[in-house]
Image (cartoon, rainbow, N blue to C red; front, top):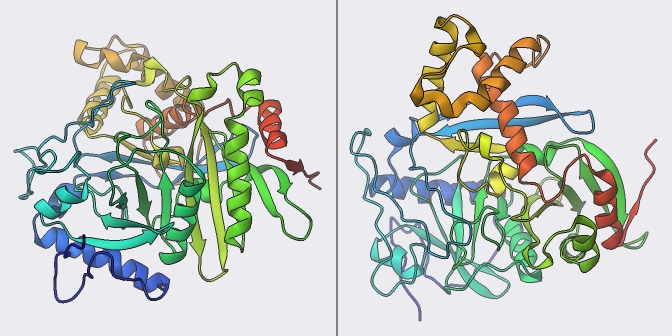
Length: 433
């Protein structure tokens, strides 16, 4: 079946129409910018709501191996906080926009008639959303913007077929092909296991954005090599709160082979036995990009497992599942924190005893977080050469770093287990000078 996309001055093409050429980075950005403009014009996205978000600057923190790595924190006040229980196979209910928020925005309803979920193609048609076709691994996908974009040119790349999320070689091929067709846009896949990031496991989809996520520039802790001397690529274990392995090469095939080996090795019986994990639950998050100027591909693999999730005493900061964009160092924290942390800061600064003061009932959930505030207050040198932030904001960065670490498939300080994983993938560790 062929379906007509929303037409707006000839901006959008027919579904299934062959993609005749690769885009330049400017053309890729222009395509996504026009989708955004149409979504605003139709009332699907409300810029006044997006303006409520708090976007803090990137800040350097010390990584588990001693180098400085960057993270960025945002408080997303435009979208509802959606908490899904582990193992819940129902898609999250999409709440309507808050009636007290500025601007008019279309209510976010459930699936359209004939659709199996809220991101099905039939739903996009029914709501007359602006979309753009893209073919990945010979299968039709479409690009659609979320109603509450997280960052620059944030979009969702959705399979036209309602098919479940599964991390397979096709997933890696999809990401590499999308990165080629949309240079300068970083595309990411959440996992295929409940509790490790994905909120809609029943329908294959990827996240993408033009933002350069902090993990892409994280320092290298250890280097390895994958493949033969003439056709291999560098594999880097990063100094980052989560275990993250960065693969880079100027050929798709090399990155594809290395990434597939890393995923297979992480899911192997040998690795699961070493870490005492349930092999059936081991999974990965993936982030991929293509730099047209250098003709170089980068793909980052994050090992994940539902056995490692955010510690309960940090649910006051983030109770939702931690997805791939956050594992990449970009926090998307719930809007409630904007007022809650302001109230907490006022209480700590106006009450005798400071961080040792008794919290009022409505703030008692933040008692564990107050310890972060106290620790940052004692660390006079913390981030002095970075942007100007309040103690509360700096504590938030440290808490976020711990949340990322909690959701890593293995402890970032456990280098021997990380090496065992790389060895299982056929990587040869390099000696650094």
